[in-house]
Structures are given as C-alpha cells and as structure tokens.
Amino acid sequence: MIVRTRIAPSPTGIAHLGTAYTAMRNLAIARQNGGQFIIRIEDTDRARFVEGAVDVIFDALQWLGLAHDEGPDIGGPHAPYTQSERLSIYTQHAQELVAKDQAYYCFCTKERLEQVRTQALAKKELPRYDRHCRALLESEVQQKLSEQVPHVIRLKVPTEGVTICHDLIRGDIEFQNSGIDDQVILKSDGYPTYHLGVVVDDHLMQITHIIRGEEWLSSSPKHILLYQAFGWPLPIFAHLPIIRN
Image (cartoon, rainbow, N blue to C red; front, side, top):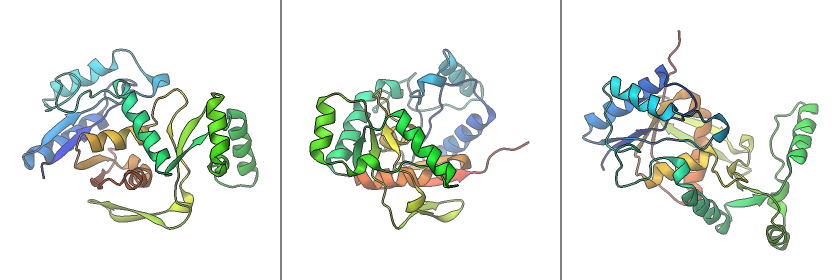
C-alpha cells in the first residue's frame, strides 16, 4: 500500500497555524513511509469564499517548506484538485446512493425545517431532521421531481446500532446511530456538503490516512457511514489534539 495523506483547506480567510500544523504532520507521515502528500482545495462553501485566499494558502505552505506531490497548482493523476471543479462527480455519487436506497430526496422547505427545529427546542430536544421525506412513496418523489420542486439529497442513517471510529490516537470511539442526523449530502444548488465532498474525494484520490484536528472527530461517524453506504474500504483515521494558547 502506498501511503497517501492530504490536507484540504477551505479558502475562507488567511492560512492559520492549525493548517500549517496539520500539513506538517501529514507531510511527515507521507515522507516517513515513502508516500505522497496531496493538497486539495475545498471551496464548496461559497458564502464564506474569500477571493485570493487560495494563493495565500499556497504561499504560506511554500514559505514553510511544506512541499506537496499533487494539487491544483501542479496537477496530478486525480485532477482536478479543487472541489468546485468536481461538481458533476458529487452529483453522480449522490444519485448513486439514492439508486442504492442509501439516500433520498428531501423536498422540505426552510420554513418547515425551522418549524421542526422550533418544536424540538420547545421539547428541550436536540434539533434534527424528522425524516419526513424518507417516508415518501416513490410515486410522490417522482411527481415532485417532475414538477422541479427544489430539493436536497440526504443520507439514510441507520436508526439503531453504533458506528465505531478506529482512531490511531484515541482508540475505538463509539457513536450511537440514533444520535446522528440524516445529513444533507447534496444541496439544492448542486454543491455537495462538506461530508459528501470529503469522502468522495478522499476515496477517488486514494487517500489512505485521514490525519486532521480533533474538531473533526464528531464528523467521523458521518464519514464512516458514507464509506459504508458506498461499499468502500475505510481509510485510517487519526485526530490530532488542537493547538491551544
């Protein structure tokens, strides 16, 4: 197995210490194992996109001497390495999950979702989607699609059992599936959410080790469930302590 690591910064501002630290650790693991270090730009959050931030990120990494083997600036066998240039890939994979009955179309309006949230808070419950569209008949779904009703695609999360993250640093961590929302994986504008984009790209780019900050630990069960829904082997996870003070 060729060890392949990556960082996937979002161009939402200046490069910070956490980006440099994570890049250093990923580069070190790749080099120690004769592997490859990849940079991917995750720019699907268009509301927070900052013009020129990509150049700032690459300038900072170059200044630190953290050289990469593949990326949007130098290319590679898995190009493109910028998510906004890969939208058709995410749409294809989201629809694949729908076809496998691992995901479903959700037509709920913002108003209905807000009502669900308000009702949950009133009951002092954790707000989450009530899976209303998960129960729609296929004929209802096709009718709404033919009428071009705005929609997203959500992952069908198991309602029972546990999802286990095998973490190199923290050991096995269990997450109750009952506490995981039916996450949106493809938004109504055709852009993927972070969760779909990162899993699809890491798999297609053959990333073997996911080395990232511990702030992403709560996202790991969502990613593992996506890997399982696609029928893909899991990468190795390691969640690094956050730099403080």
